[in-house]
Image (tube, rainbow, N blue to C red):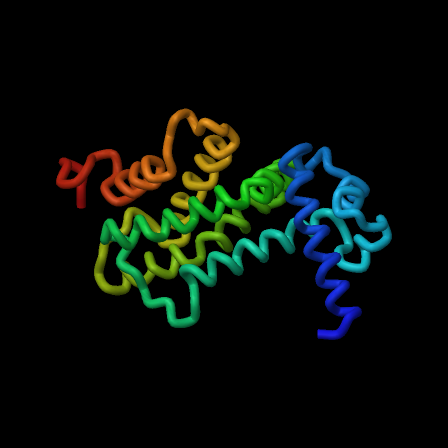
Length: 206
């Protein structure tokens, strides 16, 4: 990598890290581009060498998150997992939860951005579909092998993702997390999604 490219990559990384800090401190909506460049120690004009807008920077941070998830769970050789198996389901939920925990400023920014756009824009639904693609693939595999799902795989995956992301938004904003550990949250979600409210072997269990 040449010197110019190395400096450009360094500036982009500095802007992203500064944005994460500013989103955490001020919130996405209250953060200005000048706040980001000042925190990064860069000239305001340098921002536009890398991003057309604050929203584009946010999308770049989201792409980084997706890349991390891909590395952990969604590689090209990622086999269909049996989400009716507790350990495999828990593994997927744990990866998603910890990714959200480690990237809370981005999660908050995405939530705020989508709320401003409003439900008519369909942004939240599009994001849920994209973010739960791996779950949907696994659920489709289950249906193809004869397992009876509670609904369409896309809708079931989106519902799982919606519950997970909203819980993360609520709990991860509290340093005490209402006294809940990561393991408690992940185990609770695993049990709920695996068995439903009826519980294992309950009258409504299929």
